[in-house]
Image 1 (cartoon, rainbow, N blue to C red):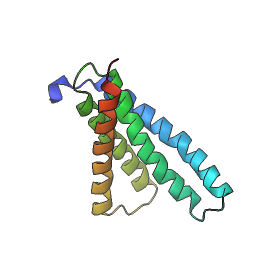
Image 2: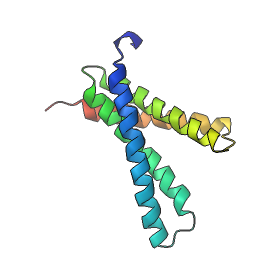
Image 3: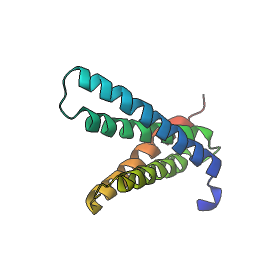
Image 4: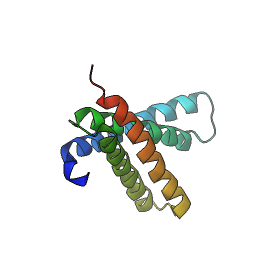
Length: 121
């Protein structure tokens, strides 16, 4: 499976997913702050990262010529790693259980979105 991995599709998926998560985090933060939600920045970021996993997996699955779910899962895992690195550099303690949950969410959501992205009409 690793030999058939298209790194360009995965890299573009991670890039598109991170850009989507960044823009949506700002939008969600503003909307939640407008309605008076107490932890608007954290809630907006969490929701945006989940949507970013889907965008990464969809775009990687769409760009891959085969094994769409695999490419989507690897892109979701890559975005999870990027989120973990940014969180650790920002001073987050990042307990092991939360890191594993983040990786599982990235793999599962990215893989499911990769299947959807890989469907050709």
